Structure formats: C-alpha cells, structure tokens
Length: 290
Image 1 (cartoon, rainbow, N blue to C red):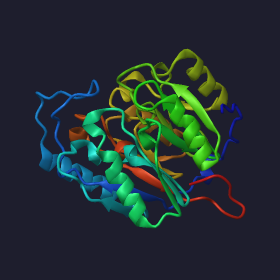
Image 2: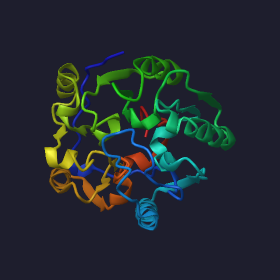
Image 3: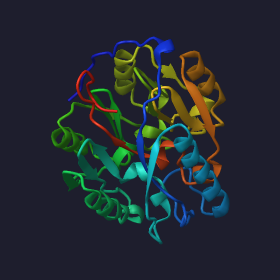
C-alpha cells in the first residue's frame, strides 16, 4: 500500500486556483463539554456567537474565491459536528461515511451518512473500520496519504484503498496534540507541508523521501494548527496565527489567506477540520482527483 514515488515539481509562477466544492456544518451547537484531545478544556468557556462569526468568515472566504459550499444541518447534542472533515471521504461519485473512535462523536457518522445518501452519489457506504474521514485521509494527486495512531485504525487504510481503488500510504502519528493527519500535514499543489515531529521516525523519513521539496512547519506554527489548512492550487486558507508558514507558502508561489478560528481551536480544530472537500475526478488530460 505504500508508494515512494515523488511528484513532479511545478513552476510556482504557473500556480492557478481551481474551483472546489466543500461541505461545512455551522457551529450552532458548538461547545466544549467533554475532553477527547489535549486541546479541549471544559473549564474554558466557548463564545458561540464568536465561533459562528468566525465560521461565517471562513465560508465567505471560500465563496469569495470561487468555491461552492454546501451546508449540512447541525444536530443538537453533537457539538463537534462543525468539524465536517471528519464526516467521511468523497471522491467522484463514491462516498464513505465515518465510524468515529470516541463515543461522544459516534452519532456524527450516521448524520453525515444520511446527508451523503440524500445527495445522489452513485455509491455510499458506511465504514466498517474506525476512521474519521478527511481528518486522517488526504488526497494527494493519484494517492491517498492516511494517518493512524489515535483516531483511525490501520484497517481503515485497506478499506479505503479497496473502496476507492487508489493507493494508500500509511503514516503513523505519535504526538497526541496532532491526533489527526490533517493537524500535522497539509496537501498543497505538487507537494505538502508537514510537521515531522508529529510522525514516527519511519513515517517522517518516508514523507521526506516522497516529498523532498516539502515545506517544513515550525514548532510555533504547528502548535497553532497552522497545517490544518485548505489549498485550492494557489490560495491556501489557514489560521492567521501561522505567520512563518504563510511566509514559506508565499515564497513558493502560493497566496495564503489568514482566517481567525480561535474559538473552534478550543476543541482542537481549524480551517481544514471545518471543511470536507467533495473531490471531483479529473477527466481527459488530467489524472487523479481535485
């Protein structure tokens, strides 16, 4: 399941944004009433009005840059449903809904499955193996990078590879602060940005081999979830607190778009966590997925 082929470098001057389709969930019921990761502190109150305003700003930024946003109805009692990336994985006309690791979030899986089933995809399946969607699965060209160690079982990597017919590269996460792959790695256009210390030694070395030109995040940027971002091929939507990472992205020909999601960070999520991409399969001269 592991491939070490490198992607061809792209001329930074040739970077162009491509319209994307995203699924989001408004944080109408957002709160921190339990702690299932090191970011969550039940004694630190949440300003829900501010969380809603910050989420609205993220959605507006996507739409202002030409992307379409669909919104799933939030469910009372599921405060982390705002983190739509965890709801599943959608590639072309196939969708796989998540099977959450923690009982506090397990009802989110059926909620996202119901949305997928009602949208008209050719095939929708509920995961058998524990996985938390794009939280631990990142589409990178013709392959999928997959995290394990905290929330998604290694068996889920095999399930995803079989279901979508794409090679999956397994990566071990070792730092509980970076409990999902999307907290420690961001797919860009022809490369990635990542934080090596979040991975086991073998996984970090594998990433270095696969992506020798990757952007390496600083400790400070990783610790504000700077890698929890979304790239459209040119624009990179990420927390406005990851200043060094923004400078690195700009030097590589990307345009960073800073977003303040400080309230949602109280539950361990940022831009990517709020965004499930509905990947379209490329056709004709293209290959892989957007």
